[in-house]
Image 1: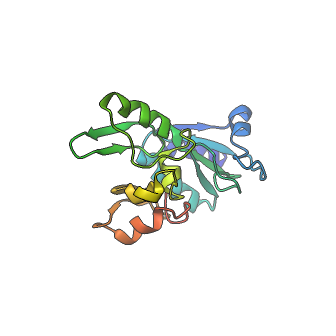
Image 2: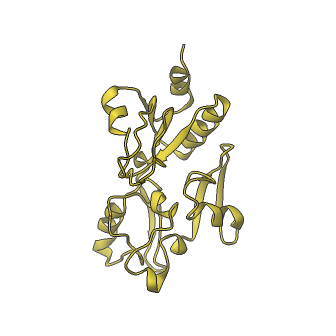
Amino acid sequence: MTWTADLVREIEGQVLTDDATRDSMATDFGRVIIRKPAVVVRPASVKDVANVVKFAAKHSLAVATRGGGHSQTGQSLSEHILLDMTSLERVVRVNEKDGVVACQAGLKWRSLVEHLAPRQLSPLVLTNNLDVTIGGTLSTAGLGVASWRNGTQADNCLALEVVTGTGDVVRCSSQEDSDLFDAVRAGVGHFGVI
């Protein structure tokens, strides 16, 4: 039995090993590095993400997260496990009064903008590419044309749910686990999975 079969039993989401899926995830936006993953995991929940991180650590496997695949130097690539975060794409709630949105990290900015448009709401900062994920841009700060006035997208993030390198699920903000919160925002994925 291979580790891929063991991984299937660890999560509720999809573990894909077909060549077409793996080939489609072997390059990023930069197209400089090619790394075909052994498996592509589409998690069904944060618990799945945590279980994948724990599984990878236990078996000494590389794991990378991928949203829109907009990295340029292979950050969103892995030869072992690739977490396709776009399966976590739900808007959880919108608080119109406070202008606060809670959503999953795999949601693309375009989908969020379309969801908010009927309410005449919009994020304070948007990048030029709306087909990237919220978690992905938060992990790289997320500069946009309004950044000169409103900071980065990461500056406008109030709280995060993060899976640490040990597989722990931690909620963090400027008031709660602020060191982790500051590390993962613009941390390029080095300190946890948003």
